Amino acid sequence: MGATTPVAFDPNPENLGLVVTFKAGTAILAGQVVAFADAGTDYTVIPALSTVGTPAGVALASQATVGGPVPVAMNGCVVTVMCAATDTSIDAGHFVSVDSAVPGTVIEFDPALAANTATTDVGIWPIGYTIEDTTAGGGTVGSTVPIVINVTPIFTAHA
Amino acid sequence: MAATTPQAFDPDPKHLGLVMTFYAGSAILRGQVVGYADAGDTRTVIPAISTAGIPIGVALESQATTGGKVPVAMNGAVLTVMMVDDGSTLDAGHWVMTGAVAGCVIEWAPSVIGHVAVLSTGAFPVGYALKDSVLGTATAANYGSTVEIVVNTCPIWCDVN
Image 1: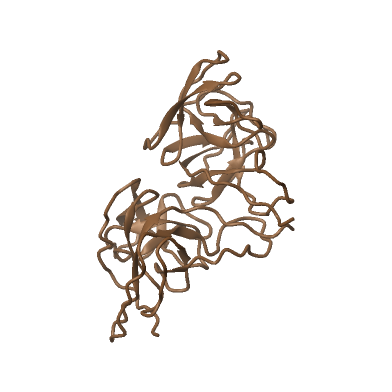
Image 2: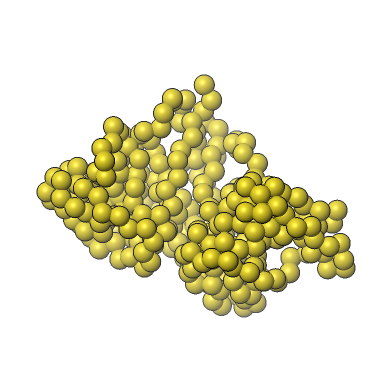
């Protein structure tokens, strides 16, 4: 198993639903899942991780300049995303979430409730569900899979 | 109260959001909620049931041939679905989920399930009702209650391990 090195790639949109232009909070690569930072700022996204904030969608273009515009495919879009490892294997129809280590990539969604928190600003958020089985990657390029973007909130255990 | 016999009916879409064409993994009836099997195959759906995989939408046409194409109304669509029995009732605004009758829905139960490692089967939300349900008929071919919904699928959660 090789960890993915984030690279720009064509998310190959099959359908565009909601598309909104955001500002890049840090450098963003085309195809990365992007999210608000923990203490988010207006219309500003960064590559998504479970240690940052709420995911918004998938970057349709790269943006190297902080503050530069980046178009983001959001709910209702059908796009391809990259998985966190070269041999990540996910069945069609399963939900995916942000990863904890590789920015802008996904892993299979873990449905277990997180420990109780008062607010949900960081965590392993669902991004959507796969419509195909994953295609294995190679080298440092992760597996890829088309998904329907369907961002939803997470829940935690009761207090 | 009689269990619904799944049958084709007009889901009468009032609005279409995302619509995609899938392959039928088994025979599908028009109006049935469809989803992936547990170990899902690429772009292949079957009538949704709480013991199979994850629902994605509602079949807009019947498809009797395995491997044949079927158009599916997905998130954002407004259409009618059938419930699991002819006496099912549901208030407008309540969520629905997959049930024990293929392609039909019941009222959403919000309790988290016992711990599972992977989210591949379960009673998933399909959407929420825009109207109160209309009772079905207990005839030879039992026709379940029907209700107009907004398709809005989402994941479910389980207990901490």
